Image (cartoon, rainbow, N blue to C red; front, side, top):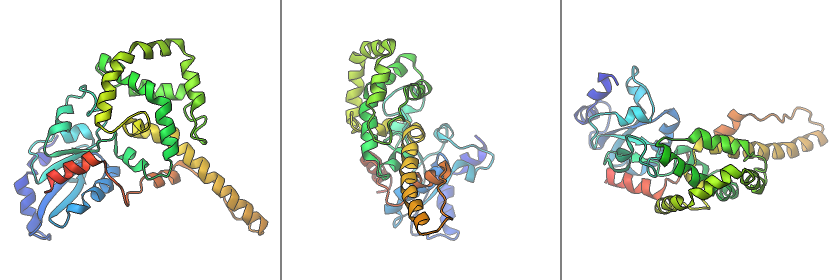
Length: 295
């Protein structure tokens, strides 16, 4: 990391409060992982803006020669009440694999999403809870198994988990929110089923950890990789739902003689529905941490 970001100290941030800002408010610079996270955290810190002047920025926006991302933020020096960072929890609240997991959990100037990522928090407002719960129940045993596997290998095996979901067609019945075919399909793999059984005893430990995070068989989607969940399950579901609505509109248009209606819908259009930050509800543990950071 360049010297520029290290030179952004609490004293420097406080001093800039006198340049075009309200000096009566406590100046804070909050660094986030990337551009998609800025608006999320801006919404999350709104309740504190009366007393604090919190600027939510990426490292790269302040330090053009530096990079973005969680590892970059967690290598920052000089964190204090005026210089804080906000990151995705990923698996850092569950596993001790990441070299920075302790800092994510307990650093007074680091706040995390509690759930896997910003995307997981946004998914709760998509009106797809039945699909998310169906996904959670169908993948519960697999999720616990891969947590055990990551512990044994001492590395994140997200790729293997994602490939398993894809191999057994997790999105095949996504329109109905019923994933029975997926469960039957992966359980037919004797090797995989035996491995899951072998790790059943160890997985009980993680059930306890997940319970502390408010997660169980119904809502483990909260701790599943948000991008995987969106790309493989929720995005296809949303596209199918929008297409059905569009099809009804097109039929009405055709009946009325209007031939200009279009039925195309693409990923970019649907992604805009996900990244809707208004009215977000951050997880309770995240709100509690923000309350302690901005009393």
